[in-house]
Image (cartoon, rainbow over all chains, first blue to last red; front, top):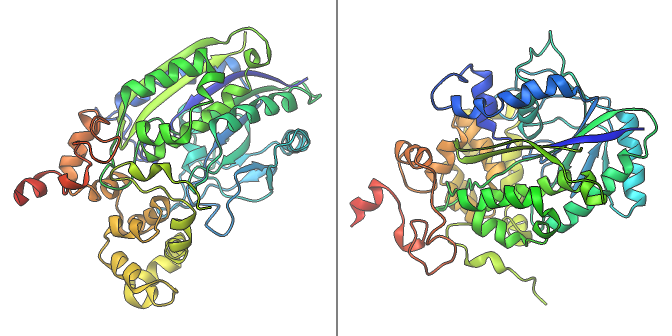
Amino acid sequence: MAKITASVYTSHVPAIGAALDMGKTHEPYWQPVFKGYEFAKQWMTEQKPDVVFLVYNDHATAFSLELIPTFAIGTAAEYEIADEGFGPRPVPKVQGHPELAWHVAQSVIQDDFDLTIVNKMPVDHGLTVPLSLMFGERHPERDAWPVKVIPFAVNVVQYPVPSGRRCFQLGQAIRRAVESFDPDLNVQIWGTGGMSHQLQGPRAGLINREWDNRFLDRLISEPAELAQLPHLDYVREAGSEGIELVMWLIARGAMADVAGGPAPRVAQRFYHVPASNTAVGHLILENT
Amino acid sequence: MPLEKPYLDIPGTTLFDADMSRKGYWLNQFCMSLMKADNRVRFKADERAYLDEWPMTEAQKAAVLARDLNECIRLGGNIYFLAKIGSTDGKSFQQMAGSMTGMTEQEYRDMMIAGGRSPEGNRRLGEDGDAQPHRQPQGAAGRKKD
């Protein structure tokens, strides 16, 4: 049977991708950011997941205002790297896992979560920056990502966006779906985006270190209570783009303890300000 | 019954809600068109002519031509769409975000390195933080004003 072995949480700042792609990782500005992910790269070589269920948001890349799915699951075999205005990031194409993706779609929709099924979409920095951070740099043609990826896009751009509570419940349904898939697969679920940041208006540049760290504490120890937090609190305290953090609750909802299992082990916790406009947060939780 | 908008009391912040989306539909779709290299070339060659191909308001076109991102947002633009204009101009997200505060690029960058903008005084209108309307523009530009 397929099993969710761990969840990973990380920011997906586009400037991190640019720093990687332009060879700036050793500059004093970027060094502390990448140092925070050294553990993750080592950990990955030991974990060897077969599939990553990657929760992220599209940044007006695959979805314009013509079509705005609240929750979209990628069921394709392959995903192109998007051109976000500077040309595509020089990273390998993303290989999907259509069989598991369709299984999850069927199971989760029958479990009352109305997903949009997507067979073709380019993936942007929201998805590729976490892959680069967790697996290190990969050559666009010579290399491949060492894992299949199921992209799961959440609308956090156009209001109304889904509530933290809904995201947390959806994570639980995803867990039930994955763990009812027959083939033996080591599956990780990642929640990306955040932490505090605001990219617009006179309040641009907002960072709330105290709130972010409290969010990390609560995500680890009391996720069900954290999931009750209303949108307004995210925006007021963590900036208009801090709302991305609801996506972390999808990954957290898929962990074993939420379904009555043992508490997860905290394998890594990292926090750094700034990466461009953003507070970078990163957490790895293992099911024990 | 009108929809509740409990977020209107956050200073210096516009949520991209249903009303903003309706207002900014063509502005944002114009921005989206800049994802294609050919369109970027045509836009750069004659911005006004390219904008005139879109059913945008005159105010929206003027805000784009002036690269006034705060005005673009007020007229329904969303930052992730507006970022396509920035990409076309070769600007980073930090340069774009900074431009909305009135600070110089260096001032904004320094604020971020020093830990970012504090939420203190910036949670609700009527407080006295640096993002409040009575304290714009920020940085040297604001000091000059006094």
